[in-house]
Image 1 (cartoon, rainbow, N blue to C red):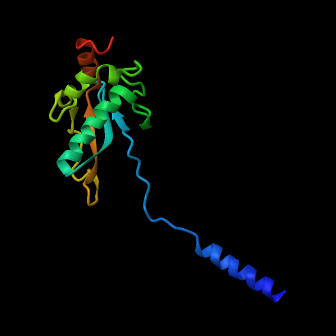
Image 2 (image 1 turned 180 degrees about the vertical axis):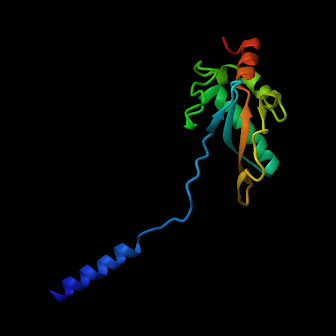
Image 3 (image 1 turned 135 degrees about the vertical axis):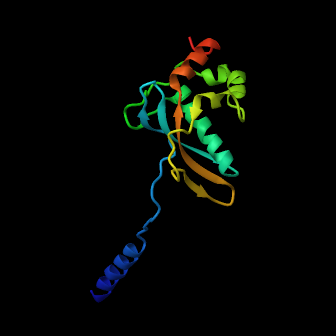
Length: 156
């Protein structure tokens, strides 16, 4: 009987000792809506990865514009238009050459994104031995982007 009690006590210590705790906070790397301006532009929080800060910030801007075009913005405030600009299935693959040029480094996408809503020291970042990940606040000019895609024949 004594052995059973010892076994139960020993097993409970083992089970309690195996409990894992995490001090890391959860960060969503999904583009999220922070608000909508009266001109139809959307203020977003987007994330990007790169070798350094400049590459990561540029990738975050590309991700914000890409999400507005292809995915729609679902996270954050409900103010943002959840529908993507292009709802055609496989449009990114169909117009691959167009979008490769559009999203190249310092490409045309830069005309439709600005960082004027960003506050000082509002960039969130994480660094590791491979590179950096930054979260930035950007404004995407949705109406102008929609007009450009219509004029270029990508959006009907």
